[in-house]
Structure formats: C-alpha cells, structure tokens
Image 1 (cartoon, rainbow, N blue to C red):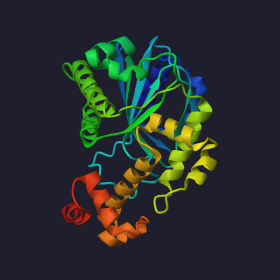
Image 2 (cartoon, one colour):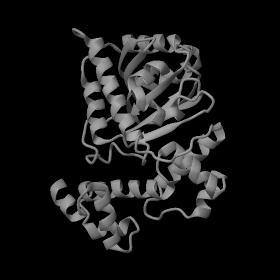
Image 3 (cartoon, rainbow, N blue to C red):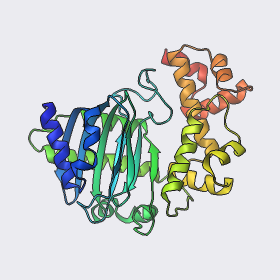
Length: 320
C-alpha cells in the first residue's frame, strides 16, 4: 500500500471514530506510517493493524471514541515477529514498555498516545461493542464485570503470553484482502480476545475502582521506575515518593491495572531480563544473578525456574 493511501486510510478512520485530523495534524510530520490495514465490521467490531516509525517523540490526546456507544478498545502492542525470549538489544530500549502487552481502555476514556523518538511500533487494535463482547464471552462474563461497568474509569494492562504473541504476529502478517478476508479477521480477532480473557481470568480477588487521570499517571510512573531499577529494586519509601500515594493505595491501584503486585511485577521483569542477559550477552548464570542484584544464587535459580519452568543453566544451554 502506498504511503499516501495509508495516511488517507488512517485519517479517514480517525474521522469516523470522532477524532478530527486537526487534533494530531502537527504530529504527522514526525510519524512515518509504514503500514496500515483496517477491517471495518462496525457496529460490532473493528480491527486495525498499524506500523509506524517516530522520527521525533510524538504525543497527542486521544479523545473519547463515539463510533460505538458502549465499547472497549484492545491495543496489542510491540510485535517483534519473534519468540518472547528472542529480544535483540536494538528492539528493547526500555523495560517493560517494549515487552509485548495489551492495554484495555473504555472508549469514553481520554488518553495520551506517545510514540517515543526513534521507535518503530506495530499494533493490532480491536475496537468492540460491549453487548457483542458479552454475548461472545457468554455465561463467564460475570468474571469480568469490571470491564463492563460504565460507572468506573478503568485501565487494564496485561503481558502477552507466547500463544497470544504468535497469533498477533500471524494476524499482522496476513494480507488484508482475498476471499472471506473479513470473516478471517473476525475469527482471528475473537480468537485473540479468547486468549486474552483466558489470561485475565487468572486475576483473582482484585477489586476495581474508578481511576482518576492523576492516579493512572502515578502508577505508570511507578511502573517505569521499577523497569529501570532491575539491579536494585526500589524501596517502599522510594515508591511512595514517586507515586505520591501511601503504600496501601499504591499497591491496590498498581495491582488493579497490571494484575501483579509491585514485588511480583518487579521479579517478573528481572527474570525476563535474566533470560536476555544469558542469551544476548552470554553471561553465566552467576554473572546474571549478581548483575541483577541477587546475592543468593540458589534463590535466583528457584525464582527463574518458577518463571520459565527450568533451571537457568538448562535454559541457557537450550537457548544457546
């Protein structure tokens, strides 16, 4: 698809979703649109595959989407066309923002969209009407009532499983044309949502409350701080200072958004980084453990095994 045609498609979609091109026209000069495919199945759902490169940092506010009266937006981000453990250093600029993940937001939420300078971002976005989604989930929808509650402003983020990442890659690589192409994308989009909701069903006992904009910003500041302090995890006092909240509130809101507690989230990232260090930099198990701040290598080994299902030495031998 030609660049001009791709840009025209994106602008047309923005207008349809109630986002005038004038809202982000100043940003277009710094965004190279590599690819875009839009499969419009509204009023039930819409699927968009988009790949962009930012020549400069681009920020704009995404206003509420009014193409669907009640719906959710699922954004599957950072697709590398590779295995989850196969990150190249050129792909990973910051943790965990560059790990494949999905963000869920209601259509009425105003949110800031950011494309960091020099980044190439590939996204698969699904916009879906709530009643259609409820019917798809069926009787199990009660487990996910927090997603369907119009009275709360929510934001949920979930790391992709390998199964989800493989399917997202497959969707992104499939040409958006041919016989029954709309049917194909609808089925694959629903399959992707099935895998996501299977993951979300593991979130047990998490209470959801409406989030203010400043609270969302605070938990993301904490998330970013955790991701850049893998060698020396932050203390509770440091986390309180970064968030501006007391620890009880921070723990509750952080778990609500990310599905993991502060400690669990930090350890998840540390194990992902351990895998990368052994694979990419060929560090030994002990070198990896010490670099990530573990003084007890036996504990490091047990933690790694919990995350990857095998001891780090065995994983390293297989990975190499």
